[in-house]
Every structure is written in C-alpha cells, then in structure tokens.
Image 1 (cartoon, rainbow, N blue to C red):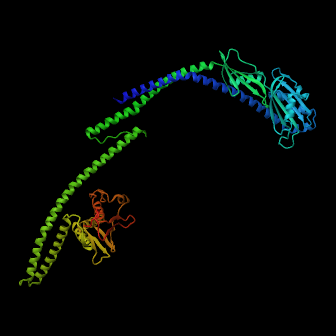
Image 2 (tube, rainbow, N blue to C red):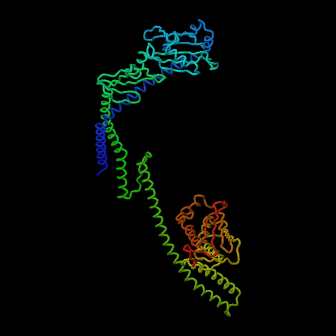
Length: 585
C-alpha cells in the first residue's frame, strides 16, 4: 500500500475517532457541565458582589483615614469655629465622593460637624442617632473611640444599611495623640446596587431575610448562599452580617438563564468549528506531506534507483534547510562521497597490488641474479689468486691490475650477498645480530639504489658491537626505507645522520636529515597506509610497513614534531625483541 493511501486512511480514522468522542462527550457530559456552569456562575456573582462591597468599605475607609489626618482638622477639634465648614467644604465633599455621612467629633465627645446627603433624593438627610448621642450609630462611635486605627461597621439605619467608618484624628505625618474621631458613611441604596448590577451584568438588590422566590427549585445551599432556579431566572440569596456577626440584610441576585441557550449554541458552534478546523488541518497536512515529504521521498527513491541500476555516483541531492528530510539528503550525499572515496581507494589498492606483484617479480629476478653472480665472482677471485701465485706473475703492472680486479670483485660480491639477504623473504625468525652490520648493509643497498654523490652519511656514537636479538632482514628493511626517504627528501644533496644510544635494555636510533622535514598534516597520519610523503611519487606503504615491523619487535617509531632543521625520526627497540604474540622465536 502506498504512503498516500495510508495517510488518507489515517485521516479518516482520526476524524471518526474525534467525532465519536465528541458526541459521547456531548450526550454524557452536557447536563453535568451545564449544572457545573450554573454553580460556577453563582460563585462568580456572589464573589463579585462581596468583592465590590469590600471595595466600597475600603474606599470609605481610605477617605476617612485621609481626612482624619489633616493638620487643620487637628486644630479645629481643640478650638472649633466656623472656618471648619469653609476649609473642609463637607457638603461638596460628600456629594462629590458619593458619601452619605460626614461627621467630626472632638476628644471631649463634642460633635464639631455633622451633615448627611441622600443621592437618591439629592437632599440633605439628618442622623438624629448621632446628633442626640444615642442609638446604634452613637454606640459604634463610642466603641471605636479609643481605637488608634480605622474601624468599619455595617449598620441598619432608617435610610437603609450603611457602611460606617471611624478614624482617629491625628496629624498628617502620623504624630500626636488621637484628638477625636472622624466619621464617614455611605448608604447601600438603590444607586449602589444599580452600579453593582451594571458591573456584573445581572440584577442585584438587597432584601430582608424572609424573601423566598415563588415557583422555584432549590438547587444548592453552600458557603452562606442559596441557589434557586425559576422558569426564566436563577435567584441567588446571600445573607450579610455586620461586624458583630449579627444579621444585617440579604443580598438578592437575579441572573437570567440565557447562558444555558448560549452554552448550547457554543457547543454547536464548537462542533462546527472543530469539524472545519479538522478538515482544514487535514488539507494542510496533506499538502505539507505531499510537497515536503512525499515528493522528496519520491525524488530520493528515483535517484537511489539510478545508483542501483547504473552505478551513477555523481548524483547530488539538493539541501535547502535543516529538517529531517534534508538531513537524510545530506547523509546520502556524504555516503555517496564516501563511496566515491572508497572506490578510488580500492582502485589505488588494486594498482598498488599490481605494482607489488611487479616488485615481487623484479625482486625474485634480482635475488636470482644476485645468487647466480656470487659463484662466478668466487671463480673470478680464485682465478685471480691462481694468477698471482703463478710464476708468470712477475710484472708489477700485472700485479696491480690483479689487485684491482680482486678488490672490485670482492665489492661486487658483497653487494650481491647483501641484495640476496634483503630480497629473500623469511618468516619472523629472530637471531643475535650486530646492529652496526644491519645499518651498514642498509646504507650500502640504499647507495646502490640511488645517486648519492653529494650526500654524506654521518654515524655518531658507533660502538664496537651492538648486539640485538631481532629479525635482521625486517630491521634492515626499516632502515633502508628511512634512508631512501631521506635521500629523496634531500634531492641528491645534504647530510644524513644516524645516531645510536642505548643500554642493557635496548637501543634508541635517531635518523636525522637536513631536508625540508615533515609538515603538521603529514605528521598526524604519516604511519597510515597509502599516506605518501612524496607528493604522489610513492605508494605510501614504507612508513606503514616500518611502523608494523618495529611494533612486531616490541619497539616504537615516531616523528619528532619539534625538530625544525629537517626531519628527525626516533626508533626505540628492546635489546631482546618480542613478537606481538609474546614469542621471541
């Protein structure tokens, strides 16, 4: 099945599941949600009325405290006069600040000033309870008189329930003893509850305790309020108590039930919106999948099929962002580059193997030639010896010629024997050998293989005999590789120094030349296979083979990266070499 069909089926299953879940939710939880909504709305309305009532109490308290701190008021309570009314302008003040009572009482309980204002009738009102120093208002004044802080109270008056606040008269900076009381009050009248109704969006008023809605059902009773449901409205009753925890009045809130219909409409619109959003999302997801995923996958599949069918590794996948598809393309590009590199490396290995076969063939021919040369050279040497000892050898020039023949024959024979020893492959068999002989033989073979007329070999710290238990042919191959590398680096002119130091445990052999040296890039991978230091003129196996031979002998070989006057290669080898498998022979 194609990916497109799978996406279609997935969208269909998701849509079916969403619709089933939605209808189950609609049928099973709608009533419960509606009842919960009624309760939550009731809590919001009740808490809203209480919050606005507390704000009104806080407002009156703040106004009372601010006025009680006037310095002028502090003077007038001790020495009242007519200027108090002019300075305070209380009639304008209580009207502007939406208050109903303004009163000042001095330290001797004398009423300095008293006025009232009814916002409904826009007329003055008179509080005889305070003026006559009797009744609940005066009792509250006496109760709060000794307090050093503001005190508020809910009190029933003949004008209605009042928020009454009493504050001590002190200096504006808070200094001085209380010099009397400053009283402000506000009647919770029709205007107050109308303002609350406008704020909450529902009808709010206060009633007496005995109010019970007609033709109603009590839905719940909790937290001091009762919720009734009538045919058209919700009726909420909340009893309010004064500061002495005595009943003051009952709040009545009439809330319409239109929100039930609104809730149903919301569910319907929510359903339609959900379906619309799902369809839109399905289209968007399909377009997204089709453009950014399916087409990319088809493109990748097409190009990879070309790789499989035609071995075309020149394909490059375009990368334009950092998403997962582009990461896959980037990985495929890296894989193709790696494949190209590995193929080139494989071809190089094949070429190296072909060259190696040729070298093996030439080596075998060289070994045979060297072997065949040895016996005739011995015959020539014997013939020269015979001529020298014969009676006819009396001519000095003849004797001198025979000596030259003998010396040159010995030199050629020594070269042939060294070539024979080097070219013959032997297993890794160790024997006791003089390290000086191995180095001398390596220098002789290197001289014979290169033109070194202007290259000087220097030997330092040469001892009589340096015994080394090793495979002589393998160690000689290492030394020849290093010497030939130095000769090639010097380009026919320079010095090659070989220094040996050591003790009873082993030797350190330094190969130094004054050529161009190694670059940092070469030092990091000089001992890897096929990493030539001769700019493509070598196979890149000399140092790799040398590294493994020295490692097989339990030693180390490294390049001195700090040496600046050419190249410096350091070999350390134990006096008694050990194979990697732990055997010495």
